[in-house]
Picture 1 (cartoon, one colour):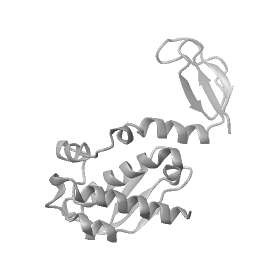
Picture 2 (cartoon, rainbow, N blue to C red; picture 1 turned 120 degrees about the horizontal axis):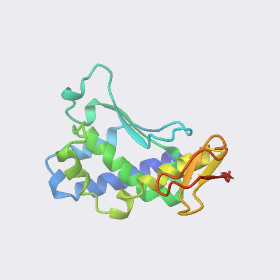
Picture 3 (cartoon, rainbow, N blue to C red; picture 1 turned 60 degrees about the vertical axis):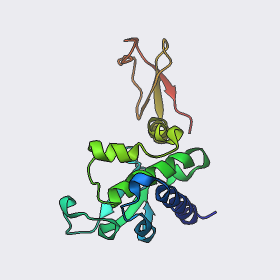
Amino acid sequence: MDDELVLRKIANSVILTMCEIPELDHLQVEQLHEIPLGFLRKDATRLHAVCRYRKGIAKSQISGPKDVRCVDIHPVALEHEFRLYAAFLLYHEFIHALGFTGHDRNFRRLEALWPNTTATKMGEMFGLHLRRKRFKWLWRCPQCSKEYPRNRRGNGRYRCRECRVVLIDVPAES
């Protein structure tokens, strides 16, 4: 199935779920359908999704979905193993689109209303997955097995943040 179609299908499902959350009743949730959806660059490793506002509108002036230019999501989030996380990412960005521009206490309260708690905890694993796809080496701790994705070999100079043991260079699997 086409990625754009999959993304729209997930977004429609997220919006439907948002319509069922009583705390969001007073917001313009139905207008979220009108927001164009897109993708981040495939080589992005830190950014998982973003809500982009229209030019010339200050964050303090954002009043709802009509002020949003688009919502972009990382294309890797559409892979089958990360689709639950993709839904949560869209939910997060849709909250921004509804006018909650910062990550303050109120935003976090609304974010915590997402019903799938498994998805809300997938961010760290997703970030690691993105970095592993991009990097050529893993520095592995022989004691705790923690791995640190890197672009170059460590030459035995770097230590594990946890155990303080010298890390071993291992080629990353592509």
